[in-house]
Image (cartoon, rainbow, N blue to C red; front, side, top):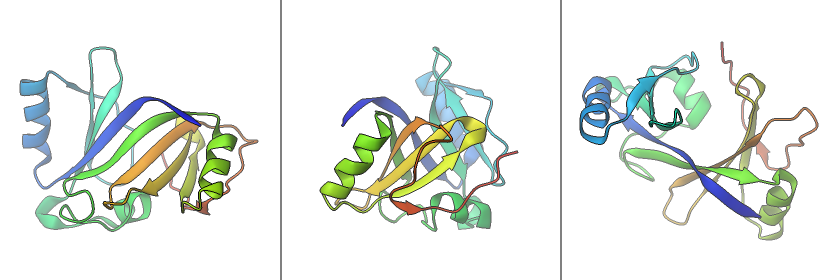
Length: 153
């Protein structure tokens, strides 16, 4: 198993607009297309056209049911705090799955064919969620704990 690159990171925020403006104005990212998930958010892109920051809106601390189904029931102050998860692009799905099984590391999986992703999630010792994204293929097998299917419009 090897990690190829960091894919994106996700921040849960109670002020989506202020957070997006900060990353636009101070960091130089720009808003771009985002799948029509059933919860509010924004994707912030770098100059290469890659969405490196995913923002998830938690207005007044409310966690939408669709967000709970997709990322779990975490408030902004548990586990990884305001950062929801760190995501990496992975290489060789089957070998990665077997590596985690061999190491007895619990992991969760989901496929989202609409965005061509097979996702693996695990938690580090500090409670920070780590995601590893692989290309989707109908022949991919889910070896870890399956996560609920998410509707992406």
